[in-house]
Image 1 (cartoon, rainbow, N blue to C red):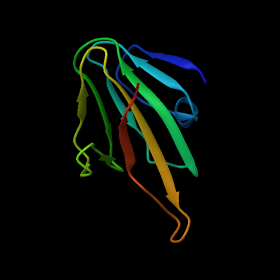
Image 2 (spheres, helix red, strand yellow):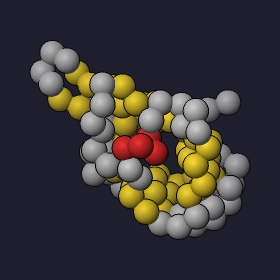
Image 3 (cartoon, helix red, strand yellow):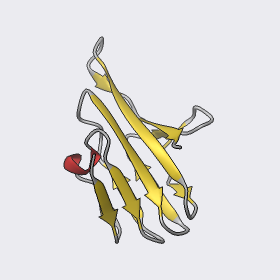
Image 4 (cartoon, helix red, strand yellow):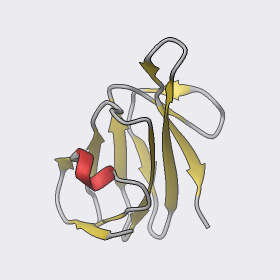
Length: 102
């Protein structure tokens, strides 16, 4: 596990999304997640201020089990765990799954 400080808007690299990493985002950061590319990814995003957004063209399954491609906003102190699971039966990647951390 590594803690990675995200100080400005950016697209996360696959290295940032390795299992167990914690991405700590400054106020107002827009973090774009790339398409999932590994068999299993599990990481945490924590907001250190208001208006932190996360988004992915692959979609993020929210807590209501709807896949959205619009940004999800985190408030100051919010932490969310995200997962990506590969469907080995058909070889596709799922959207990221959003969970509550803590």
